[in-house]
Amino acid sequence: MSGRQRIDGQIAWVLHSYPYSETSLIIDVFSRDHGRLPLMARGARRPRSALRGVLQAFQPIELAWFGAGEVRTLAKAEWVGGMPLLGGAALMLGYYVNELLLKLLPREDAHPALFDAYAASLQALSRGEAHESRLRLFEKTLLKELGYGLALERDAASGEPVLAGRHYQYLIERGPVEASSLPDAPEGAPVRSIRGKTLLDLAQDDYSDAQTLVESKALMRRLINHHLAGQPLQSRRVFIELQEL
Image (cartoon, one colour):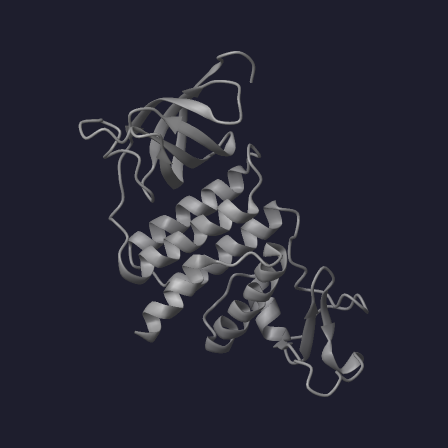
């Protein structure tokens, strides 16, 4: 962008917001055509501001903005038809996907496929659908869009197809390798074995098998933690604490 070029008619989602001065907000939004970017919402904290009820997380809004700096200025925000409000576990999972985008997605990098996967995930959560399969699909799409797509259907060492009846270890940045072909792990070292069936189910987004649900969740957590490079997920910590209560 140059000068005060204005962008209009962008469907977006608010990922996070925080105060800026006594009357304004900075909102981090995820838009289809411009990716993730921060916007200054002038006057949004005033008691009578029309923006107070619009700039909500987990609701699609139409935005316009202008400016050329790192933080653009919000020009317009309109509600474009909502979804049921998230609550309980669905709300915490919504914060989880938002936090993944905030920590992993570069600014101003458009990802239409990821935008669609995010919207579909929130819609599924708002309808009370089984969330595990939807989260796995979102996580897979996120890693693929970031350039870390999963190799699931071929053995990374031999090039042979993964077989449902065999067990594999998933080597980060390489893919699955049949467990029997790897040297024994040192005593006390964790062995992360995963069924070939789980890998094939994950490739096909088939989560009808209970063990596939468990193993695919563990695998995706390993991969995401690796790419977070030590950044903690506050939403995950809070969710675990609430489950313990």
